[in-house]
Amino acid sequence: MTTISLVQGDITRQSADAIVNAANSSLLGGGGVDGAIHRRGGPAILEECRKLRASHYGKGLPTGRAIATTAGDLDARWVIHTVGPVFSTTEDRSDLLASCYRESLRVADELGARTVAFPAISTGVYRWPMEDAARIAVETVRSARTVVEEVRFVLFDERAYEAFARQVG
Ligand code: AR6
Image 1 (cartoon, rainbow, N blue to C red):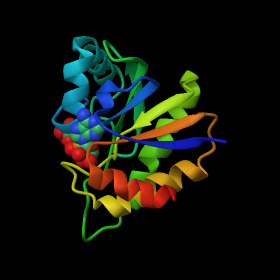
Image 2: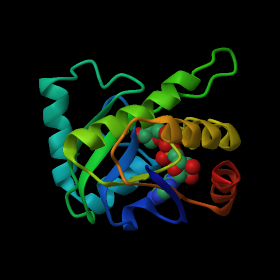
Image 3: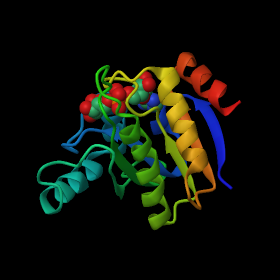
Image 4: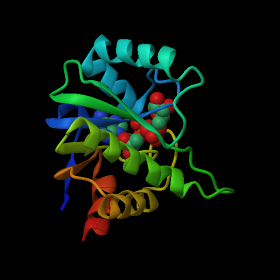
């Protein structure tokens, strides 16, 4: 059984086996969580992302997939980088958002991570409505086949925290 916990705060301040990054397919950094992780984690993470890109993801990491690097100076063993979908009003991309959580947990299982911290993927720059993103995140984690013991959602502000709290019940 996976325990779901909620924290309001900055994911880069968390201690966990793995911290999930809401990256983009370039794997070369960006704003939001991605920028914060690379800033606090230091250059080792970007260096590893560059190598992975060169060796495996020349066209970029596809949306909904996840890969791991070490965590640099963060209080974690790994960063799991996943690419959320940009929200669309004309196309249902919920499966891709669910895939981010599923794939990240699959990678976590491969690594042997027992505690995994997630941000609210796609709810910032990628504009996914918070209530819906929270529902997809919580439902996907609850139905995932994983041996991860704790999934911790780390929500940046109160609005995000409340949305996830309503889903967790
Ligand atoms: N800790 C926890 N949550 C945070 C933090 C933090 N330090 N900073 C922001 N959030 P976003 P996306 C929240 O934009 O929507 C990047 O440029 C934020 O309030 O980080 O998946 C990437 O390179 C929001 O609720 O990710 C991509 O290009 C949530 O984290 C693109 O943004 C996600 O916001 C990905 O967009």
